[in-house]
Length: 203
Image 1 (cartoon, helix red, strand yellow):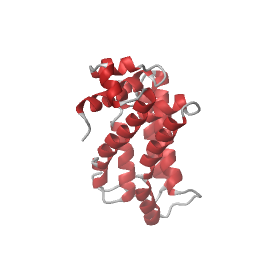
Image 2: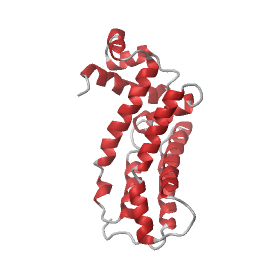
Image 3: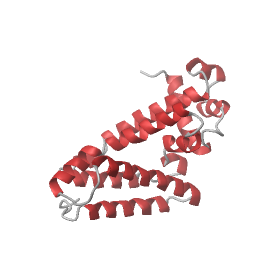
Image 4: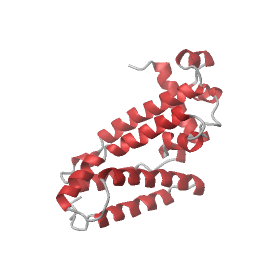
């Protein structure tokens, strides 16, 4: 069970880093957002890098629980589950930009060359999440026999690339609609990969 003050610092990190970016975030900003002292911060973390590593792990755990319990798993058909995942991601695109953009995607864009430990944690988080889609992709390929020279992993990573790029464009344009449009295009692309797929009745 995570200590209450540590959880508050991690939640604050998720919000502040997604709002300001990793480099611009100060320990003071985290403490202010968490309504805790710097003494409390240093009781749990040696510094900002250690906080970022813990935040990446915390992000993976909390988002992992969100997706594990999401309704798209209820579909009987594996391709319907994959398309349902994209619909679920699209439905999460609401509120202010920091509320739906990706913590690890935000951090890795800034520190991919300068802080290898955080880069590796971000890679593990993004690719680990992508791997959760591979089972449904594999089952869909077995059922529908699509053409093309591609792998389960490559499609799973491509989906994550579209998501991360959509977050970047939403930030650049300061609006959510571009990300929604991208995910609608992604859904159509996957449907074209599996032309023999027929949607479930009522789905």
